[in-house]
Amino acid sequence: MSAIRPRCAAAAALLAVAACASSDSRAYVPDGEALSRSHATAWTEARIALRAGRAGEALKLLEPWLGTEPWHVPTHVLRQRALLEVSGEEAVRAWYERESETSPDDAVRALLAARTRPRADRQRAAGYARARELDPASPWAAVASATEALAQAAEEDAKATALLDKGFVADAAAARLAAERARADAEASARFATTAAPGLAAAHATLAEVLLAQRAKTPSLPVDEALSAATRAAETDPGEPAHQALLARALRSAADDRGAAAALERALALDPRSAELHAGLGRVLLDLGEAQRARRTLDEAVRLHPDDADAWLNLAVACDRLADRAQAVAASERAVRLAPKDPRILEGWAMILRAAGRPAEAATAMERYLAAGGADREGARAFLAELREGKP
Image 1 (cartoon, rainbow, N blue to C red):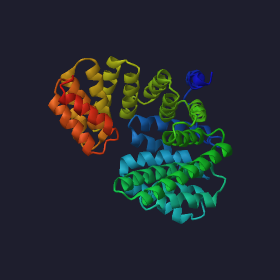
Image 2: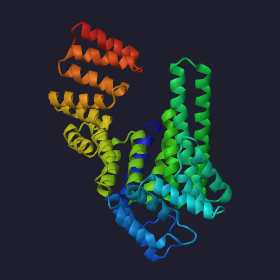
Image 3: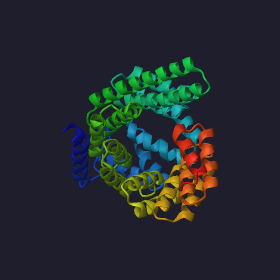
């Protein structure tokens, strides 16, 4: 029985979200209990406008509510995103830094100013820490801290890999430990947020992100809690495509690709302009064996975002499965031009070239895979040996 639990849990999650998605997906406003009806409506319409690429309209909708005290965090988060598109990063940072300096003891202003700061020198993390110091009960500051800690963990993991490749074993181990600590901090902050604000979709989404990141590092960890948190986020705010995409990731981890495809289709119904969602759905459709649908979906992904090497490679795989070898090779070569040192891309390119009957080029591609540090060195050498022996 235990072997089928993830699939059962995934099915239950999918049914619950499907039922919820059939209701009014515009009704939920995060942290909106104290808002007037007009303010809540403006926020909802601004989110729709921003998703549709109408950032200027979103700014106009939100403008009357910027001075509402205390500041409504989701209103200003939407406003930051819209202002970024209209006026650029410096304008966003200057406005929120000025507001924070004017009211230095306001936790919300400190939080929102921190969102505009660069991550590289830890300014953003320091700003979030200041916001939590000013208001230890704030779920928004906890969500922000968790997200930042998760990003820091990813950076430390990448640093550890680079150090290990250079032979600095002790330094790599220290970076791995720093990553583990950051993930633990992220989990603690996310759990605090879900306890402090159980009705906040963003809190449950953040916990799901943290748990999925931990499972990516330790695949033996159960997926049930991550799936439950992702489901809760998608149920609470079915009008947010990011929550549906997150649910799809959790369902994929639970070996429910069919459920993941349905979640991504719901996300695309909300945000059809998203290249990332098209790319994600295309990848899932490949795993489901639906090559024709995958090709159409991935064609749209690369049309919307021509610089996505992964999407181009997945498109190449779809074309290969449909026996369109010429297009498969062309798409894989486009992927390699975009990411010439990515081992995954190089390995896929080699496979496509071999399937197209171009063994010499396939061998060169696999040698580039090895030179780029590809992990499956034994498999790559076996691939090259088979080519030398003339095996198709």
